[in-house]
Length: 240
Image (cartoon, rainbow, N blue to C red; front, side):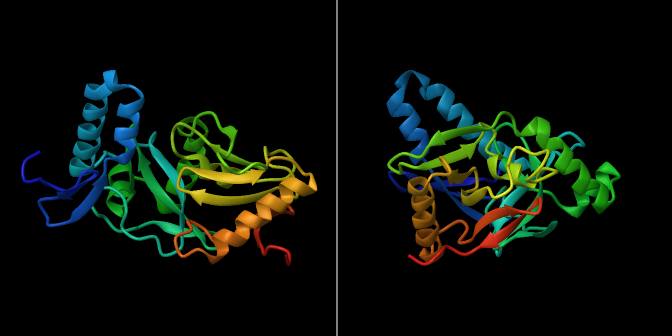
């Protein structure tokens, strides 16, 4: 990749400097975990890293098929692609916003107004298209028990777009996959947590986690949400 410089900061982190001077630290931890589980995949893992870097350097071309909407916290910093700022966003619920983005098999970047011009889309039409594309781009949602947290389920998909499921229409209530009264807490860019059951023990675990995230400076979202009247609204943890 011409003009791209790579420097090892430590045994698990690379610093990538793009031609425009933008820098990004790339963690190798997850890739190494994959390697430890299956050393025979080393070439595949390295090729995946290279492909990700190339996409970030070149930028994934936007198309009418790969526009999606992602969920991020309010004040999300430059965290995707080669350092581009958020261009197209609007409020979601609580401390979260929804952002128009361009999806690919290995990475995702924020969409820009230039992308809409090239696709000959109005902003309103781009938001509608990004929402409708989620049904295909997101893939199958899976709910798995969170490791070390009995009573909570993590909901996500292989695409990494799990939290975007909360945006689908209708978002919750009749006709949706999330019933009235459903509680949720977005814990990372790729999954959200829900109580495993509606029993008191599971609800107590959910609220304990919600209180922990509300007090954590590193939390993805500090706001639990609940389905009321067919839409998501913030909800504070009960005393306890």
